[in-house]
Each structure stands twice: as C-alpha cells, then as structure tokens.
Length: 367
Image (tube, rainbow, N blue to C red; front, side, top):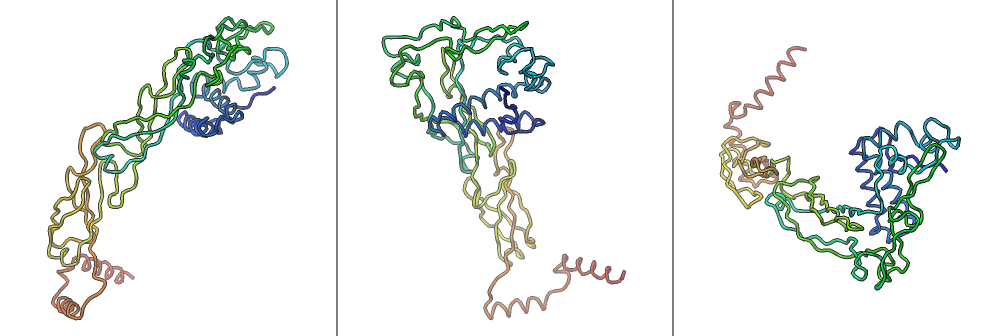
C-alpha cells in the first residue's frame, strides 16, 4: 500500500521553506484539533497523519533524506522498485532506522504545545497590560490520575513488546523496528479502562490564566508561557502555551514600528497666523506649536510620545500630520473679508504657487 506524499499531506509544494511548512502544519493542526472537531474519529486519524508528516519535514536532516529516497523507495527498499524485494515499512520506522534513534515510545512523552490568539488595544500594546485568558485543554483525569485504568486496577506491561512500545520485524537482510500493534506504542495495555476518561487518561478541562503583555508588542508578536500546554504521558512534562498577539486598529492613530502618526485638522487662519493646539496622544493630550505659514500635510514631531521599543532600547515619537481645512461655507461678511484679503495679496505670499507658475511658463516657452 503506497503512502501519501508528505508535502501533499501538509498541502505545500516541495520547495517550501521551513517556515512555510510550519505555518501550514499549524493551520491544519488547528483545523483538526479535537476542540474543533468534537473528537471525530476521521479528524483524529487525519491529525495523526499530519503530525507524522510534520515530524519528518520539520527536521532538516529527515526532510533531506525523505527528498532523496522518496516515498516509493522507502516502501520498496534502497533503489528497489515498490514491492520487489527490499523491505516495506512505515516512514516513521524508516527514519528511526536511518538516524539510529531507536527511541522508546513506551517512555515519557511530552505534552502538546497550545496556541492562542489575543487581541489587544493599541494603548495596551504601548504601556503593557495584564490580560485574562480562558481556554480549554486536555488534563490528566482525576479519577485515574492519568493512567487510564479504573480505580483498583492499573495498566499492565504489554506482553508483545515488553513495555518498549516497539517490536522488531525481520525482512530479509533488514531488521526494522515498528510501533507495537497491540499497545499502539504506549508500552502498556489497559484491561479495565477508567469510565470517566474511557481509558484515555485525559479529559478536556477549562483553564483561566492571567498573562502579562509587555509594552511594545505588535501584531505578529508571540508570547511563550512555559508549562501551560497539555500534560505529557508516562511522566512526560507539560507542553508550552504560545500566544499570538493582534493589535486592533485605532480610530485616531496609525503605527509604523515605534512611530505613531496622527492627523490633526486646523483652519485656514490658524495655519496662516500660527497657533498652539492640544492634540491627542496615547497617554492623553499634549500641546503642539503650529508655526505661522504651515502648509497642509506638514509633519510636526512630538518626541518620546510614540511606542516603546519591545527590547527597551528607546521610545518612539509621535508625528502630527497637519491638515489645513478650507471653510466649506462662508457668510456674506466672511466672503467680503477674504476678497479684500486676496486683493491685497501678491505673489510673495504664495511661494509654492509662484514656483508652479514659473515651471509652467518654462514648459510653454520650450514648445
């Protein structure tokens, strides 16, 4: 029976980078996680297949060996055609043999890592925050203390593999180690399973956790909380919890690294005569002096009022982009004043207009 291509299982092309493979795996693992599928058996088998494929492709040495030998050669032996001599073994066993790992699957197995997404406000990203997370994860069953065996009984050593979780099978000149079919690699069998967890040793439970979000995080930042993943088996340690940060858009501010940008409208008279205005900042308000003759689109700087650097090296600035707003409606008296003002003006009052007219004149003369 031919095995599916590992790249096909993860839905990525063969030339994908390690990061692309990791992202594809995380997406599929999230899709087929028991929390999403409700313990569906087909989804559980699919997740096992995805985990097995990623276990090989995430390791550069294993991936190189897989790319070299390919699925067919792994089934039919080194250089042999499929089904003609050689040996037939699952790809997990092939790589265990190839790299001489010989790991005991019946031993301690670390718990799975968990990944969560956390949405925060820009102000929380600027000054840090304590956030409360609620999520579900697998926990050791209290009734059987994680053994999977009913009260008064305990798991028994698998008679077929002697507790190693693996059996050695001879194929001609080769001797291949495979997962024990009787205990599925656990090294133990449960004759009398716990009714609470149905012999799995773990049940789904809700967890509430407070985490400190450091100042300076941005969308894409990832926080690691050690030991807050799922519990291991047979004495294995807990996995970790990874929190992916998403910073919500702000109605006033735009962020570029450690710089905060804010557009502030002023009227024509203020731009012409100059004015001191109060502008919003991440921490309240600040006074900003707008020089006389300021043009629309001018950028003025408020130093040290931007975002902090996540590593604590420096504090960014806030840029205020001034927008000069032309009055949309005038009274009769206002119109009279502006007309009088315009009649008293000359080209010196409008240097940008004067330069523009000079360029237009040169173009006309060159034709």
